[in-house]
Length: 241
Image 1 (tube, one colour):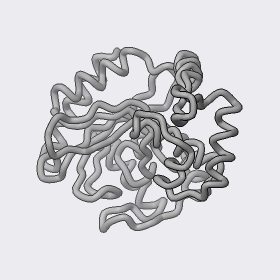
Image 2 (cartoon, helix red, strand yellow):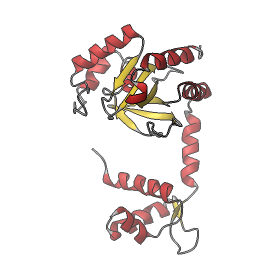
Image 3 (cartoon, helix red, strand yellow):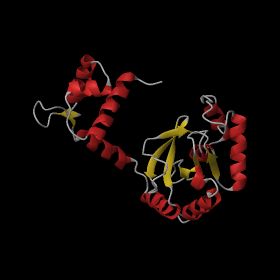
Image 4 (cartoon, helix red, strand yellow):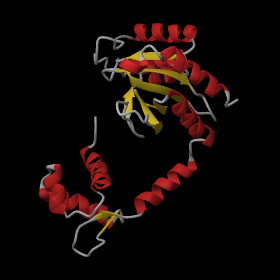
């Protein structure tokens, strides 16, 4: 469930991030397929709050530095430890695949740090992307850090949609996967949510946070490499101390 006004405000910011130059209200409305009247009202509200300005008079709106200031204040209050960022970089360099740090976000695992592979064919990911917490190795590495009662409460909120033939479709299946991962030493996935992707993940409880680290890439390149990639993860995470 989403709140349309909030979603639209965020979409305006994403629009400018892609456009990278000012735009008039009419251009924004046309590009996003919005009614002009509601677009004018939304932009007027953002401008009144100091989030948009007109760098060239009537040449169009553009996000003000206020967005950056707020984002920096939020990040500084709860930053990812530098050791975690270095871990992502080290694992990405050694495996050659996309590496991400995930944190719980309701029934999702959200990427809070990402280092993409340099391969032409790779998993494209960015900070803020979400994957189902039950249908991804990154997510199950988060579930493994929760007490059983907390997991059961979360299962009741999950819409068990079948994304592929390998998607886990019940709490019992997820619990079995968690038990197998504990015995194996790592969590793994094979096209459970995103087609043609395979990955491995480990829990990363660090600084009082529930985090996980995942290495993921195309099935053609990574399915058989999962034990090796897991070994890299285990060794690099072990170096954190």
